[in-house]
Each structure stands twice: as structure tokens, then as C-alpha cells.
Image 1 (cartoon, rainbow, N blue to C red):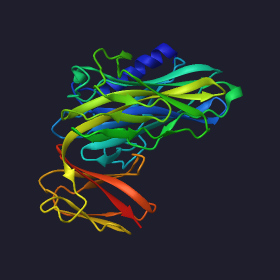
Image 2: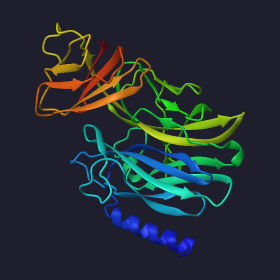
Image 3: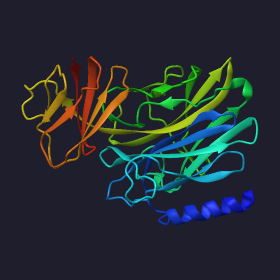
Image 4: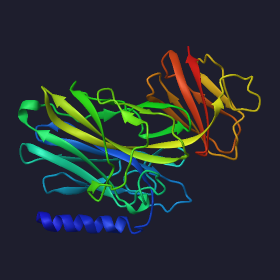
Length: 348
């Protein structure tokens, strides 16, 4: 089968998998790569989706990946249980939020600069800084330079899930937590989100929103309204003063109402998290069982290190934290995306 016929065949298969063109589900994502041997690379497409049953879903068992050399493939989802898909069904990381990892390998025919891309027609609706976001596709890309003089060359990776929460009228800071296993220098640049292969017209950055080009630290001086915002950042990889690749990561920040910092049992009627300091388990009480609750735990750099989906049928919960190192941590409890409780605790 020649390349043109193969591309038509792949697109036909994808059209079968995406029969509802008006579905809405993609929140964030990125493409990363790992050099296996010589010209062969493992490529991961990480896509974060909305699973709220009140929205029309378009869950993918496979995604099309274009390798930038005229070739493409249907990459299967590889994480989570296998119930509906023949491969895997993804993993929940927060209320109505799923992480999906699609994996494939590809051998390039020779050295060169290649752009790996993925596009999903079903971007999430209601994003405040993308006009008519439901009508825009979700498009991400990653650039890889293949040259024997720069081996090994692995893409930047991320430790934090790219769906964050910020409180309105409160200054917000978050690190994108990119790292490079090859020890190369990384830089950060905000760029427009992309749809249908081009920058989305009208995708704006709110006033007071910026990123440090060297550390990847995001600063947002007091978000003003409750909504969802999407941003794209290009993380460039530098070696010996030259760029040898980049990853474009699109991430989402959900702004929610701030109800106060609850660190003491003296706050009558508010959500409680105890004991503090903690050794093995955190207990949470006075949750509103009518809402969906999620606990987020961050280290002092703002890196998200643990997410726990709390039952929406109980007013209390317990969370194991034995794996956490000794030290100080920040936490957020998000309830139905409209209220937030924040605080600090010490792990012994």
C-alpha cells in the first residue's frame, strides 16, 4: 500500500471512531518521544479529556499519529483497564477527568528534522479565551531532530497533569514541571493554542498572565472570573547552544470560587483535613456529599504530586500519604468545580 492510500485508509478508520463530530471532550495534551535505538523512537501522545456524562462524549480507543515523514499510524491507548476498548480505557485523575496515553514506535529512514502531529476534532466547549472552542480542533505537535552527533535525544517530559485549578481574586503560581533526562537546557515560550494545524485566531492570554522563560513558572495576577482557560507552551530543548527539538504542551486552568483557607478545626462548618502533622493517613470531614470532590496535593514548588478522587456519596474520606516524603505540602479540595478549600499540612 503506497503512502497516499495508507493515509486515506487511516483517515477512514478515524472517521469511524469519531462519528459524532459535535462531541466535546479534549482538555489538554502533548506528544513526547524516547529514542530506542538509532532511528527508532517510541512516541507517546498524552491526551486529557472530559468525561462528564452531561456532555457528548467521543472517547478514543486509537488516535492517528503523523510522524512528519509522510507516514502515520493508528496508535492504541495503553493505560488503564480494558473494558470497552481492545487495548485500554484510560485512567481517571480527577472528577470527570481522564488521562489517556497512546503509544507507538516508528523507525525513520534517515537523519533530519521531523514534526510529529496529532489532531482531534473534539475540543472541549466553553473555554473562555478560545472563541467558539467547541468548533476548534485540538492540534498538538512535537519537533524532533535526528542526527547521530546528538544521540541520545529524548524529548522533555512532564511530572504534573496539565489541568490546574486557580481561585478567583487570588494570585496564582504554577510550575509546568518539565524535565529533560538527557540533561539539556529547557526554555519556555507561550504560544497560541492550535486548531486545524494553525494558531487559533482570538486565543488570548488574560491580563497579568506570564511565564518565566527559564524556569517554566506561570504567574497569573488574580484571575477575575470563574471559567476554563487554555494555554499552549513551547518547551525548547537546547544542546551546545542549538535547538535540537521541542514539545508543545497545551494545558488548562480552571478558575473557581475561593471559599477560604481551612487549616484548623476551629473553622466551624467548613471542610476539615487532619491530623496535622500527618504520618500515614489524612482524614477529611464535612465534605458536601451532594458534590463531586477531588483532593490535589502540591509540593512547595507548586508541582502537583498527588490527585485523589473523593467519593461523592460520603461526607468524609481518608487518603493514604505514606509515599510522601517528610516536609511541607499545600492542598486544594475542589468541589464540583465551583468551590475550593486550600491549606497546608506537614508530613512527618
